[in-house]
Image (cartoon, rainbow, N blue to C red; front, side, top):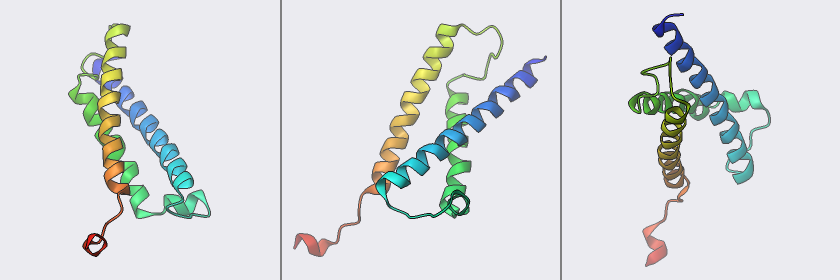
Length: 115
């Protein structure tokens, strides 16, 4: 197997895992917060916001992994180096995602409420 094929396998597996993880998290988040009521999973997947997130979020994670050098050497990786690279990429990405969701969840406040 050549280097390019192995790199593509890594990327495809990461894309699928990220999309599945994000979908599971988003369904759980919507269920717990009660922001939306969606009767079935298929109707939920038909929502434009969900479809956009299922494309953009995995691509953002792949870019983060690529910038961290995760896909440079698919062969002969040190397990320690790989664990460290993955850990710090996930910490950074999770912090960015958390603050993006906090901003998304902040209710809009009318200026009249403070008058």
